[in-house]
Length: 435
Figure 1 (spheres, one colour):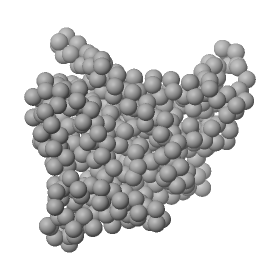
Figure 2 (figure 1 turned 135 degrees about the horizontal axis):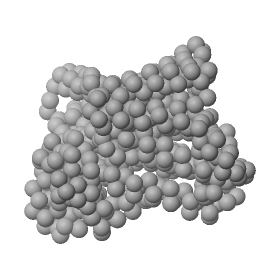
Figure 3 (figure 1 turned 90 degrees about the vertical axis):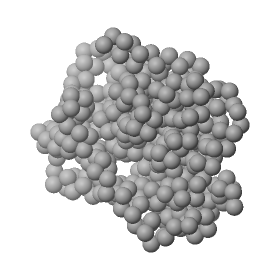
Figure 4 (figure 1 turned 60 degrees about the horizontal axis):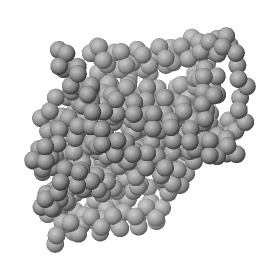
């Protein structure tokens, strides 16, 4: 049977399992078992435990629960209130007001974690309850969080950039530099959409908070100081090479506990609640990652990614046609695979096509990251959708509808870097030519 026909069969099976009310991770494992039995000639009793153990035993994954716990601590102490009270006076004149905190917070935290799921989970723990309490439009709040969480893949340091750099044999330092301007661009596009939505839907916005004089704004700005210093310490420890992402996450947890303690908002009760909350969220994400890893391996055994990539290679497309086709390819693969698996399973086949078309490999790396970002917010296997679902308790389709406008914003970002490739290539070219 042609591997190209496997994808719709597995997609239909996954949709049916999700519609039946099964847990997402259980549905993923069920589809993987079905694919293994029907399309892959490999022993399940060996592939399943090895792939799941390999996914959950990775040392880099230990940063995720630590960053989630850091967010829980900030959420369950008054530091989250301080964050909003400090930002509120500075965003009152922007259409959309405090919904911009999702974008700004995710942009800042993305430079700490390098993980899309950890970014969405950590910022969401702080922002969503406050936005709900203040009466902000829930769908836009949820959508902006899920979409902005994808900045964890784009703003360096990014794990997926490292994977691509190794697979494509390109400079990881150049990739990190190349991600800076596109990251700022996506933040600007997300905030721009929120502003436009707020101007067109004034009736869905809560009443504006009083506009404070500059002296009071500066006074409230001091409320941000502990959180900003904590984030700067975590970011600085990574960029100076003092700590790895996992060590920096540990620093973040210890720092948030100390800040909460000295501010008088840490109690034994909220300490336990933060630990329990982080455990629940991390287990949910870890279970999904393990199940997705098993499905990724099954997809590889069945030959689906390579078959799709090889088929595109036979079409003889122009560079723009190739980019469009690869966008569709990665969006299809994103329905089944996590971002790292998408890159690993397709790079060997795609790279010769990309080089033959004369496409800059640094630019192409950022393009892949942006397309993978879209995959993070598209069902049925959009990790950020699952994270936000866990935070809100809503069903996956409701979350997906809330994120839909930001899907098109991300598509606009891909279009802009395609038309103006200098957005990606200018900074690494300038920095390295200067040295």
